[in-house]
Image (tube, rainbow, N blue to C red):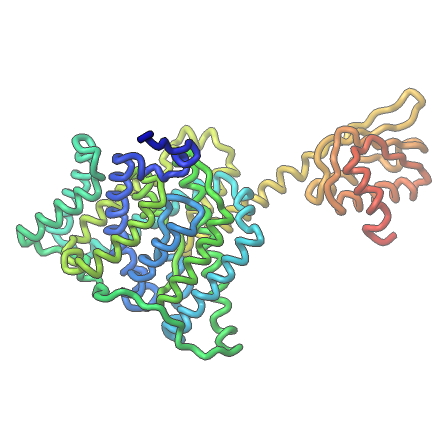
Amino acid sequence: MPRTVPSPRAALSRPPWLTSARVLRTEVLAGLVVALALVPEAISFSIVAGVDPRVGLISSFVMGVTSSFVGGRPAMISAATGAVALVVAPLSHSHGVGHLVAAILLAGVLQIVLGLLGVARLMRFVPRSVTTGFVNALAISIFIAQLPSLRDAGVAGYGVLAAGLVLLVLVPRFVRSVPAPLITVVVLTIATVLLHVDVRTVGDDGALPRTLPTLGLPDVPLSLDTLRTIAPFAVGVALVGLMESLMTAQLVDELTDTRSSKTRECIGQGTSQIVTGLFGGMGGCAVIGQTMINVKVSGARTRLSTFLAGAFLLVLVVGFGDVVARIPMAALVAVMFLVCYGAFDWHSVKPSTLRAMPRSETSVMTLTVVIVLLTHNLAYGVLGGTLLACVLFARRVAHLVEVRAGTDADGRRRYTVHGQVFFASSGDLVTQFDYAGDPTDVTIDFSDAHVWDASSIAALDAVGRKYADHGKHVEVVGMNPATAALHDRLAGRVSAE
């Protein structure tokens, strides 16, 4: 019988983990490592949100599995996060879990709407200095978040931490087929159990779920009062979740030299949010720490690792809860410390880099870090840094318009405008002319300039009026087609005489 040869198109459409045992092993082990790292994080965020630890764990499972199918960025991990927990905490404490879940459902709908409206395109306006500040603030925040786990750790706890850091550094030199974090966690767990070392474990942070999650709607009245109560929190979750997810996706794009669909990511986050709410979860978004473990530390690149992270999390906490509860927190803290070190952009704070970098860029990066550390909210830091970058940019470009004066052969005064004329720079335009001293006829040449908005047309009208007040005539020449069309449409109509 003739052998069937698969078509090139079919071969190209296959996931890489189906055709490579090495890729499959990498994705499976990466998913397991991420699942282990998600356990203490989900429990901690549940406490922040004021809900049972089981809610955070279920949220992480549902978010991870759902986003692996509908998300736009392969290998990015979505789960319960501290940013979302901080937003919904006041609602949970004042109105209960039912209103929290309703807010998560509404936030998911808003994220889908924002995705369809193209909000992801706004990411192009986030400057690199903000992204650098985001990454550095994130690394510092993750580091600080681990410190409570070391409180009252004692000599034994710090000993486990030190041993974990040593293993994380040494293991990759001898073993590359298995992620060092997985080996570290397994070895230290076995050692602490066999040696009866008294250290804080995962089980000490809260009870793990024993049953599978079930579908259901929140037990809240369907009324305008309920909508008014949950709407502000839903908007907060939607915006914070999308911003953190899009920033994380952009970071993974840079790490992997690949592109992802940010619009699909917005819609996928909204879909995951709705599914999480239907299972009674507290919502979430992309988690940068576990994403770095998955992509940078473990080398995962496909959706399989994202799916398995959620699946393994459910299996671990439901089927092997007693075993997971014995994992020493210090071992997981050591893994997160390694993530912090790898995530921080050390080059950005080198003295040589700071000396070469413009002060405005350094200021934007610093402000982003400071806001995040003060508010414990990455979204606020990104907004603050981007706003400062816009202000500094506006100050720079406000003086980019240059007007050069000259005289034609017939004695006519000629001004040549150079640069981009828009609302920030048009104010300078009015001050560049000698209204009283110029001759009767004046020419303004826009051959080397472009006019962008109504503010600039209003400024040009003001120039014409000032010359008219002195009994002089102005002729504007050299406008490119776009500028001429805007001028013809708005000249004399922008402001009252």
